[in-house]
Length: 324
Ligand code: XMP
Image 1: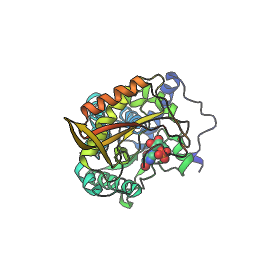
Image 2 (image 1 turned 90 degrees about the horizontal axis):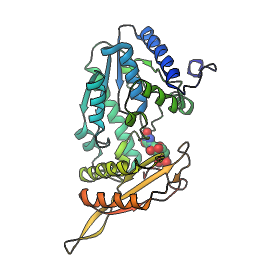
Image 3 (image 1 turned 90 degrees about the vertical axis):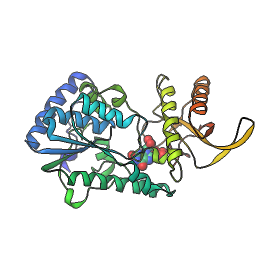
Image 4 (image 1 turned 45 degrees about the vertical axis):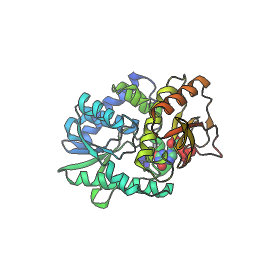
């Protein structure tokens, strides 16, 4: 498709000056495309949707309607950050949907990873479509498609699990960053004034902590993954350079611990840090021993239900990056 090919003359956006020229050009193009109509955007807080939101806010202000769905599988502080940056600082027209119970009820007892992904993907579309149905006058759908999505998957945002929107929600798409590579999206985000922890955020899977709470998700183990993940990120953030991706998972088994002279069963947190170019192969990153010990102590002392911390030193292949 000709309009899905990056123009050969397009210069790589490597500086804020080039990014500013791109932003000015896109603001004009967006205004031409949508006029005074409304655009709907699913805003996850990831780099791509955040940059598209910031661009659209500049171009059409409150005619952009952002929907942030909290499915309960986001990392600690993420929904709060989306609200702070977009609603409070950028004045976005933002609808926050607390769908935590709905997702977790649907996922209860489901232990097959692909079934979990499908449920999360389908539920997300249902929630988004319901919110869209409540709104009047939406004519366009904003999307954070980037160039690798087009190259890899025929123009569909490559989140393994998310299908298309239902028939009655087939809006015309607004995809202002569809010819950009990830590094270019980051320069544009930085130039738009988005915070560094949003712009340089490590990749985070669409099904979120759902695939890191290994096996059937329970609310207590999910909270433990969320708390432990916040500690792992806070500590490994201090590495320079930081690894490409770093997180933890909690498998669905318990092992023996000892407290106040008594044996008890608790979960094991698995710490993982990898470097990769394209996520097709990956190498385990060496985490300094002092940092690992600090991670261990903080997790054991503060995360309820955890009595063991493990370090996953496997490469991909044969291990995948995620645990499921
Ligand atoms: P694996 O585990 O397959 O992961 O080695 C490779 C990269 O893909 C991410 N990942 C996902 N991203 N939806 C996503 O959007 C998913 O279902 C999913 N599964 C894995 C993973 O975090 C890693 O960066």
